[in-house]
Length: 79
Image (tube, rainbow, N blue to C red):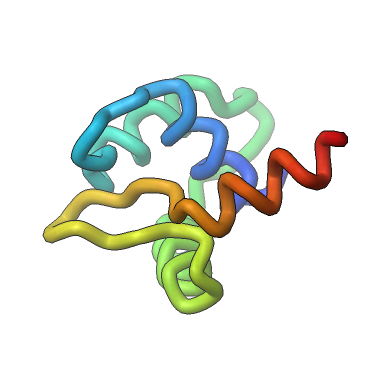
């Protein structure tokens, strides 16, 4: 699973109304990561930044949430 897909999954699981903090996302991903994979913090931060640039995530202070456009795109892809 890519870091960006993991971030989307964690934000869905945490269900914070105001967005999930970067620390909470990181801790949740590290707890659910398989033991044979190594945590790459630079890749995680790059995935967050590219997701914001692509419009998939919305950054609110130091928290992130899924954008309404991304939610619509996911629903349409599921159909």
